[in-house]
Length: 558
Image (tube, rainbow, N blue to C red; front, top):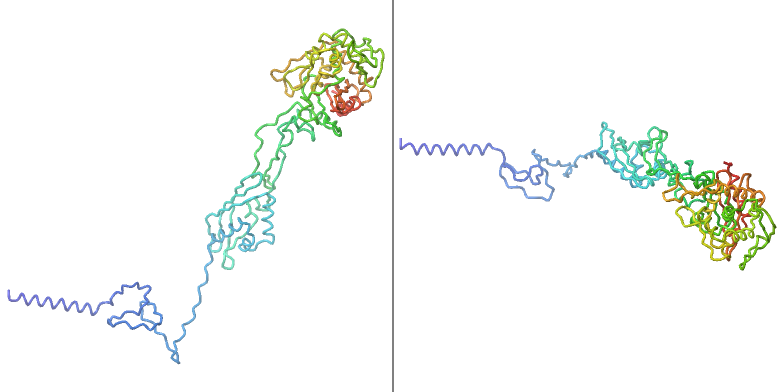
């Protein structure tokens, strides 16, 4: 048994070698290490023969089959390869076309846009330009969304847009680009609603301006009349910037609007018809002038037309001239004189040991009643009576205590100082020297005569806190002043002014050193008192009173 073991091992080795040789003879070709999909050399053969030397001809790509050997023509030249038909180009994605269109639109490149539209209308570019111009669009930004296929040859691309509208700001919108295959290319199917959805079915868009309600209104709740000449007093009376809206037509739906005024309009005490009449009364008046009107029962300012500037109708200080004789007459009546009392009205009067005063034009009316001396505006009468009856500071006290000629809170300005000598007293009595007043102050004087109570002028429903208290006039004084002011209109210096029936008033011609005289008129009719000043305008009766007549004639008597 031990002798057979070597023979068995030899037989096994022979068997293994034989099996390996059989496997090599019947197995596949060796695996090339190069990628088979892009072989560039001659295919290897299972015979193990060495590769053929290169001839310089381009290598043939291996397909895994036998190599194709070019056929020879009859002349021995290689046969031409059969011609191949190129593959048809695939159209670009509809999203790409949409992006190109939106990019051109945003840049205003209407030529490129037109080339990307199927059957564009002849006015395609003009429509876009008109839309931009009419709606005041200053910029446009567009952002495409994700394309949605609608079958093989149709697609939709939603997009977001933001337009900037001058005066309104950002205007966002959403729309859709519809596309279709036309001759192998994607094209935009343009329609008006591509510009904006509101243009569908013939709809349009428009900008509409509507004037905003002014912040300041008349007492009737209406805007101030045109050219009211009250701009210094009511800065917000002019219409504010018009309210701008972007609207659909015909629905009227508002898509965009300018901000509304956050505050509510405020009504003033100004009366629209009175303000209009006051402003028109100053039309054509050359020198700086003012017309002020107040309600006789409340003191509320009903009109202020001012070309003096700087709110001088309220706070300016001017010598009131003979209109101040209303105050002097009140003091004389309080001293014991009556309207019918006889007084002298010579052409000239000289104060004892002091200066002389003369009437306008040197008029001498002799002895007349106090009422007619007032109507004729006799300077000499009032200087003499002030000297005889008001030397002990009564004139200043009357003016300050009962007619507001003092430093005080409120809208008006007026003042008088204590006289230092008879010359000053005489000049003060006829509205010169230290006596100064604004038109509003003199309107307060006229209103006091009408109502029998002096009140500070106000521009609120009730007097503000700290306002001066009303001061009643003695009934006898008020009635006497009314008779005198009536006579001035019907028989005196205002007779030729054309004032309407029922007007009570007083003219004034105030001297100004080195300049022309100021023309004044104060008066009332019904419940309306007024004052007119024409700076350096001349005579009160000839210049200021006709302006008052124009004001009062334009209004019904109330």
